[in-house]
Figure 1 (spheres, rainbow, N blue to C red):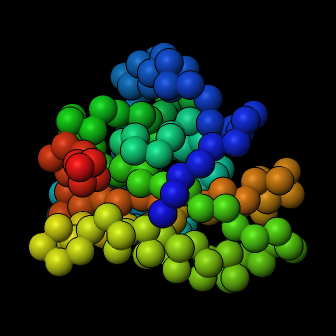
Figure 2: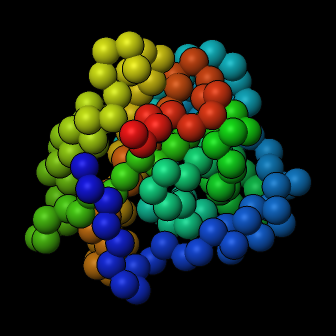
Amino acid sequence: MTVTRQAGTRWPARRWTLLLGLVALGALVPPPTATGTAGTAGPRVKDETFVTARTSGILRIEAGECFTDPAYSEEAAEVVVLYTPCHERAANQSYGFVHAPEGEWDPAALSAFAWRSCRRGFDSHWSGEAASGLAFYPVLPTRETWAGGDRDVMCVVYGPGGPMDGSALPAAG
């Protein structure tokens, strides 16, 4: 999977992510989720609805960067994800982006495309023992972001048993 970035894309520099993350960091309160609260330990399955392009903070995450699970921020008055250094036991790590084909908004087709594409990327990074203890999910554009021209699908790796110890991406060799 090749990750490219076009000039003028919507992914701002990391310094804004860090600044906003520091401001919101103290205000996080875990929200209820389908599998418990964000702070609940134990296995967790994440799907294409876990985080979307509508989730505040996700559009600031770049390929290879790590981020928190969504949690309610009283300061922001909404659910947010925050950039976090991968060595700080991150919950999620972006491992690439794929560009969905142009066309009408079709959530079922977009979901199928995203899962297929992210599966190929996952399989190219992790196989056999390296894939043990890891899973992936896509972050999809929403109807609103699609209408604005967003066709980027983020592919994310995570540990279903809890935070990952360091970057999950294989070392470049």
